[in-house]
Each structure stands twice: as structure tokens, then as C-alpha cells.
Length: 199
Ligand code: FES
Image: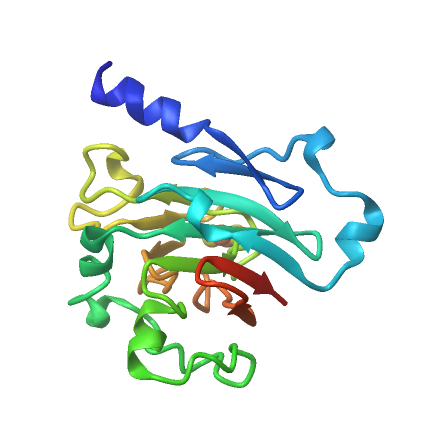
């Protein structure tokens, strides 16, 4: 199988997750499948459990929490390395602008940079802070896989197709984007070593 074919296959890999529909995604707008949506009373629930170990290394899945899509990414060491060294290109590298509404677990410099409790597992509201589109996951470096939708020095992250906002692999918004803020990080905690309770 070619790299391209393998990449495409991974972009459409479906996984079951805690009774909720979840879909692994690459550079695609992620559709929610009607039959996989939770019932209305489930949507109304304020908390959602998810087993993060079901997310393969380097992959993203989308789940729902309170009716909103949520990105969960299992970041590789390489991806974590690529959130370093470009603070000067970010609007808010330490997530100061949203500090009054950020999750209270974000209490160290490392967690503010990683924007996660455990470095590898990133949990973010999947909604662009400009007008709410779902950004596309473009995790590899440079323009080889993405063309000029990202800059030549792209370190990986998300590209919002609506008006071109860019976010790095911690969901931090890149300078020049119409989006004002980093992707929102919500309250969550680990119930076990690999099970998170969101909300
Ligand atoms: S909604 Fe994302 S850039 Fe406008």
C-alpha cells in the first residue's frame, strides 16, 4: 500500500468509543453519522467518558460532548516536539487571553504549552474561534500534503477552511488568522490511567 493510500485509509477509520460515535480524521471535514449520534437525553448530559487509549498514535478522533464535536488527538513525540519553538508566530502562546474561562487543570507552564493534562492526549472543542467551523487536521509538516492552504514553514496543526485560520498542534491560533483565540480547552479529568471524564 502506498503512503498516500495508507494515509487516506486512516482518514476514514471509524472506532467505537464509550457508546458514542467517534471518527478518526485527517484532512477532511468530519461528517457525523446520524445513526451514531447519541440520543437527545445523552446529548443533554453534561459529562462524557472516553477511553483515550483507543486513539492510535498520531491520530485524531471526533466525539461529542454536550452536542458539540470534540477533538481527541494522541500526539506522538515528534508532534509534541513540533509545538515548540514558534511562540513568536502565535497570538497567545500561553493561553492568557482565555484564562478566566480555561480549565482549572491548566496550572503549569508545561500544561499551558501542551494544553493537555497528559502531554500526548489533547482534548479540544472542535470549533474555530472565528465563526465556529470545524477545522481540518493537517498534522504533517510543510506543504507536501496540504498545498498552499498552509504556509511553507507549517509545523502541523489545523487549518480552518472557512476563512483560513491556522492552529498549531496544541490548538493555539497562528498570527494573521481571523480567529481571535486558541481552540477552547474544557474541564476534564482522568478517571483511570486512560479514561477521561469530559465536563
Ligand atoms: S470560522 Fe474558522 S476561520 Fe472563519
